[in-house]
Image 1: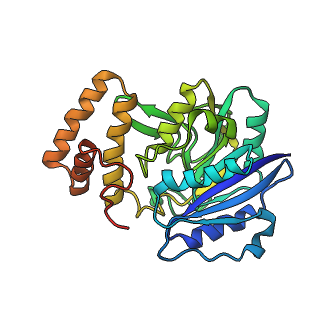
Image 2: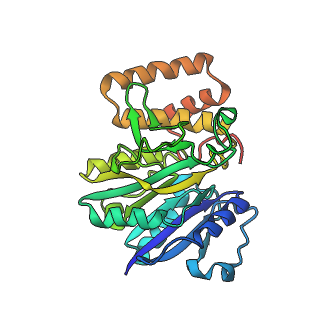
Length: 306
């Protein structure tokens, strides 16, 4: 049977991680051998896990000596998985819970279709974590879309989620190719990772999934969105919420890095002009993000708070 290694990062999110593990206990594993790997990114207070409670998940924990960010932390787990002979790597946020059949559905798409590089599930907002909480009634919560496939808006260089904020009434129920897979959850073949490489650790946090998706497609592989695979996401639970200083810093810096690597020439010029505007009138951490981009301070950089 094929080996699937599930990798999730933990950073001061022990409760979320354990809730994810609980949901995985119900996952259909009949088609593959599963190993669940937690990469703990918070050395000041390492996560404590009763591994006996999760025997069915073949649970293992890697304790990092420092916060390696989303890219570096996941890379640590991916390297371990590849060394142990993984056929597939599933990257999934710890602030999610999953449907029992979600992994089986992703696996079947990867096995049955040709030239598959990565497959992403349909992702709903967890109840109470919607951007616009007052917009939905009780039966709609839990069916509000966070991601139903993705595309890059190259005019603004923003990774956009299809269907975001829409109540799911079946409008995105067709399996289809998509431009990028969200780092929130994606199943990747090991052979693809060996060919295209792992996450670029310059990013540390944000845009690393878009960068990896561009490299996957650049090697001729396809990225699929699989609507029959469903998970729920506590949006931005690990980064202080939308609009935080942390997001201001990393999104500003990394958007410039991603843009100057992949965007059309005229868009690159526009991004540089915009960065000068941030220096003049942007928020404090936007300014710091621009400065660090030009000074080539990658990775963790000048993190707002740790």
